[in-house]
Length: 227
Image (cartoon, rainbow, N blue to C red; front, top):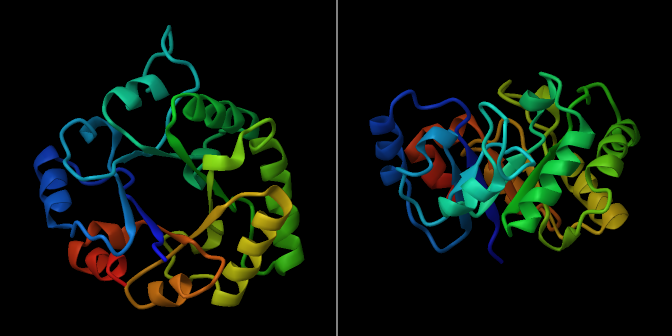
């Protein structure tokens, strides 16, 4: 069964030329569903079968300086959009705002990749993690049509640290999210690399990966997406 593997390039690369070169170096595989999420400024000039944005606003147009709307993303052919990443939550984005974004994206038929896991710690057990996630998901998914929503579980302590969650933990959390909220697809993210990706993808209820740093190294990302 195909898995969904999304690359979050964050604020990288620093030039359009490097972004285009990186995209051209990534295999156009049919083994899995691969989504590249470059900085929004490059979306119109990076070529790949499936493109995603890293964030959006919830209004289509208006006096919202610096924002990018789902309607504008749709016009660029964007099919996916990350919402609620921990790095956005860390600068004050609320679950209420995330809920607005989810509904706006779905209205324009863009598939949201909803990130949860901000506020968790490596010392918490599964039940404590579930309590944190419930507080986010109860608001994030309120009045949202779940048919097309993808949830990415990213324990914040694992992002960019080189310390990933265990396979068992990722599987248990995926099961919880699906059973409690009716979400169909749950991804794992947090220090995913070519060494551990296969283990996560082998879990029955982990439907794919959200990859950060490893997606900036074409050889390593190609290894992941061809598993």
